Length: 114
Length: 114
Image 1: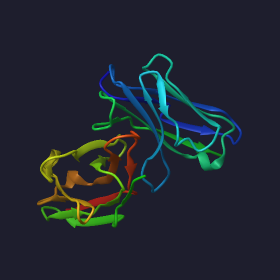
Image 2: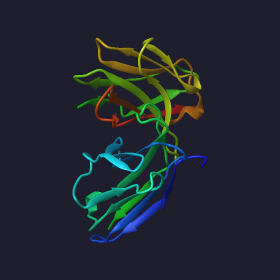
Image 3: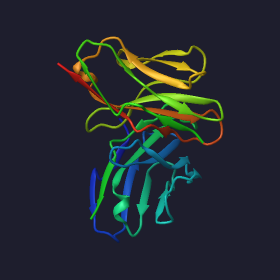
Image 4: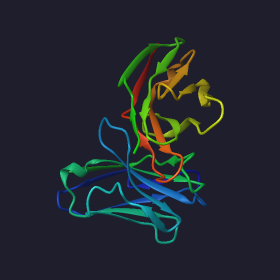
C-alpha cells in the first residue's frame, strides 16, 4: 500500500469496554511496532513484531493489552476492560528491515475512554 | 535503557530566521539517533538519522543535525525556516544492538511566525 493505514481514526469507548485497533503496514515490511502517545508526550514503545513473531512486548502496560500479527502483515492491538488512563493515540509503524533505522508511521488511532 | 531530553517544549521563530531544536540523550551503550517530524493530522515522518560515520547529517527540507558524543547531544538546525516547517519535532534514540525499540523525547513544537 501507499503507507501505513490505521483504523479506526477515532474510537470512543466506555470504561470497561473492549476495543480492537487495526494496523495495515506497508506491503512487504518485515517489522511492525506499536506505540502509545499520551497527550503532550512522545510516543512510548508497546510491542514489536518481526513478521508474525512478537519479539518484544516489554512495553505493554498491563495484561489487558494484547497484540497479534498472525499472518505477518495486518496487526491488531486489543485492549480489554478499558480504563480512563488508556486514553491516548495509538501509533503503528512498519519497517522494511528487521531493525528500526527507518520507520513509517500511520496517522494513529485516538482512543478516548469515558 | 536509553532516554531522550528535549529541553524546549515550544520554539517560536520568525520566518527566514535560523532555528536550533535541542536534544540530549542518555545511554550506556552505543546508539542510533533520529529526528522525526509530525505535521498536523499526519503520522510521524523521518527527518534524518545518525547511524555511523560523519557526525553531521543532512535530512529532508533543509534540516541538519550534529552528533556530539562527548556532550551526548543531537541538536537539529535549519538556517532559514519556512512557514511550512511549523510542526512537532521528536528526537529519538535506539541501541545499536539488542532491543529494537525507539525511545522518544517529549517533542518540541516549532511555530514559524510570518
